[in-house]
Length: 301
Image (cartoon, rainbow, N blue to C red; front, side):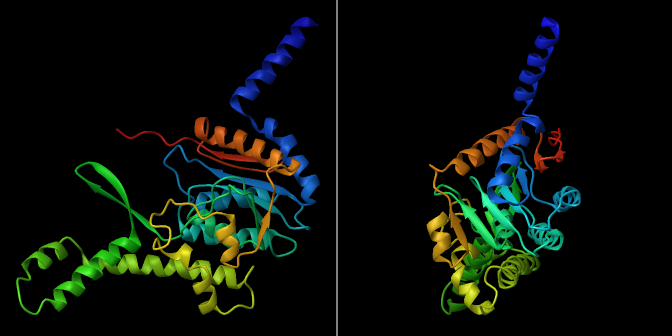
């Protein structure tokens, strides 16, 4: 008997160390009782080089197919972002499977870039005082001398246009310095960047117009969410847009006080799942009964 008890305790310890799904299941179940809706968590790693992509939409759909969503759902989102088109697909999947045609999002810590777009698609965003959304302007990785840097597409376009404008205004003088600098830019690439900026903006505005900002003109929506569309306000892509700023943009925000019991549950679920996608897997999408994960990307030599 003692041996069996030891085995049970050891198994429990190993599951705790590995943060298996069973360690999070009771928390998700308790949150479902509080919100009276199914709860699904969607985490992608801030530690490993992964991004929101179409495979996440497929995994999420696999989870939603197995749940009674007649009351809608709450999607807990934690991610540095990724592909805007994948975010749009995730929005459509959540709306399509929800019995109410809508869903809520809950941000325990950070839902940035494309993850912010997923939040835009919800009817309501549930946030604590330290929850973060972020700008949705596209980013591009550029490799120079073996070193990869990430740049804002908006800033690349702006620097190109500023140089071009200065060259045009240079009526008298030496154009050579401007021409040399403009030579580093490929006009075809600039057009692709403009298209990606337009796409990101279009997805966000259309998503809001068909959801939490239904009935508001698209031009007005663009003005309301302008701090999300470019880094002019935040200065850099990674700078947080907190709850109060989101409210000021006319987003539908529900606040949770950090002293509330529900936030203690949300925080524990975040800590457990964030640890899981920082050590054992790169992505995790799960409900109280089902868990889908992605492996850690292999390092390339």
